[in-house]
Length: 504
Ligand SMILES: NC(=O)C1=CN([C@@H]2O[C@H](COP(=O)(O)OP(=O)(O)OC[C@H]3O[C@@H](n4cnc5c(N)ncnc54)[C@H](OP(=O)(O)O)[C@@H]3O)[C@@H](O)[C@H]2O)[C@H](O)CC1
Ligand SMILES: [K+]
Image (cartoon, rainbow, N blue to C red):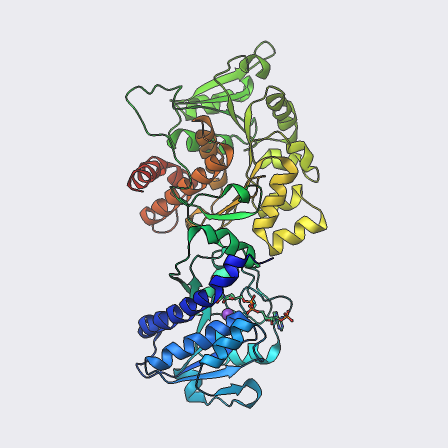
């Protein structure tokens, strides 16, 4: 139900949306390769997205641009009807409009067909009409893109420019939607703060919150989206009183056969600033860890020194369990860590051990699956469908099923907490698509947890630091960094996060 206050705001918001989109096109046209006098064709749909299109056309005409409105259906909402009436130019029905090849090549079509209210399949005639143009700009979303998930209906016409109204939508940042939005530019909208929640309720697709924006108490427990950036979380600053324990202790379960993954996780933890990192590993496999990391402590497990013995040290609260582990190694460690009430980052081998049985992960603080691991753990048709078409909801449901924060890794990683918070990370780089990069991340999550951050904040911070380190390593290595190169940049990434936190 739309709140009365939000309803009363809508005409003013539509006016701001249409006027702002017109301004954006006038400013950005030359960058899109449009000439001064390029013709503009607005394709207006039946809902409020179409209404925005009529308002935009009016403002473009006032700015003396050659603008034509083509209608893909009579306006159905009161707002869109009012916007249609305020447009004094002609409205040509789609079926009767005959664009010439010059218009196709040199003009621009404004996609005001469907926005947040789109559902189902794209009708073929308007989709083909949009496809015919070389230059395209979208209002809110290219028609056929789901604003919440970024899922695209077949036939979506990719745009070079998208006007975002007030705030960004998740679907503008998540693939595949992100790829068809082109450059996304926010059109500023002013609205009283108390109306923000009401506005969010009024629109079918969620709106992204900025990191520093407080969430009203009544929104607790509801799905709400955030853009992942420093400001959404705070990493503790260094102080002269710090010692290695106050900076956090991270312990990694080391694999006996696949030692590389555990060592990369250890590197991630150490490079991102934990005070002390330790590895617990069977004595016969300890040497590779001992030789590999002079600054880490290696705890050799023997019949007399077991994991239980190590857990007597209460300072060892945070554990990374999974990188490089076989199922039997997971079975011998993960349940023991949970029984001892440790906060555990579950990755790799632990996720494979829980294939088809997500309840086995209950008790972990953070789980970090990539799409393949996710599909193995949460292998019901519903979850596989969500994974394909709605990554934020897939991650959220995984978090709710396991009680753990879920980092669904990808080039647009999402971090979901069981309480409904979902952060979208856009701060990644292609360079992270290399073996071992996920192992590094698990160690960074370990550091952020060990230093006392709550699980969702810790996971968000770790994903951002990892992304920043990936970008820096990519730049340094000509676009082709190794996981070790990414780890090597983590200290500087944390330094940058601190600077940004202090500035903001
Ligand atoms: N965020 C803001 O502050 C503001 C956003 N505004 C704009 O409003 C739209 C959302 O408007 P809404 O009217 O809810 O939805 P749409 O315009 O996107 O589309 C709804 C109409 O489209 C029909 N529809 C939907 N899918 C299909 C389909 N597959 N085939 C045919 N027709 C379809 C739908 O028909 P129904 O029969 O399903 O009802 C509707 O007629 C948002 O995107 C912004 O652009 C406002 O300007 C205010 C501020
Ligand atoms: K649109």
